[in-house]
Length: 239
Image (cartoon, rainbow, N blue to C red; front, side, top):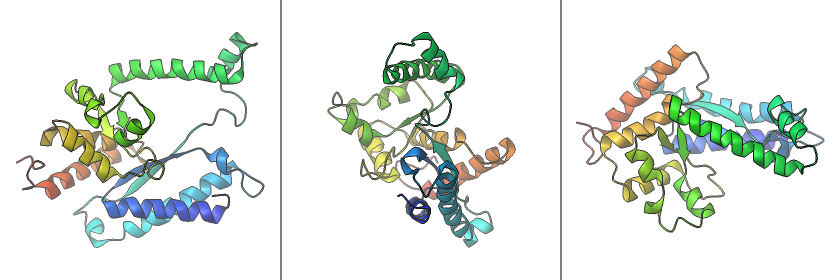
């Protein structure tokens, strides 16, 4: 993953893989600094990933069913993470650094991240910011979860939080969205309406690459398509 053409092809294949699974929207989160080298700067890394995703999107959206609007098109977003050590510090982190000038930089980053997490929780409660859950990844990284049914996902659902399922890392966790949905269905008492809401939050709270009016239209199209393909399916149909 250290050449532009490699990044483009990997991004393309990722998009094609999830499309084959039935996914219609994906947000690819990665740390671009891990790919920066003598051949690629930050701009090249991001453009290479975007080219691969865009190519897969264009190919997929040429299908007849999408062109005649009988099913929703595929879209994607890119989320860059772990950017703290690229370029100047943001005012947020600089405030911590100035306040604790003799502390280790890693300790400062952890402290700042904890405060961000607290703020995110408050915003979640006040504004309905969604929680993304990957049951498989959490089981692998949290030894206190002995069984999937012990995961707090069940409490999140009971308390009507805006929670949706994700894959976190398909290759490391060896999972896909279908597996995550099946884990949730098999280990938690999800009604057909609750499952639809859980999946729907992934579209409603997405970083959709368009105007808000376009996003609302797209979300409605996706939810209508969900109802169409689940109609008559035991445990999934809303009718």
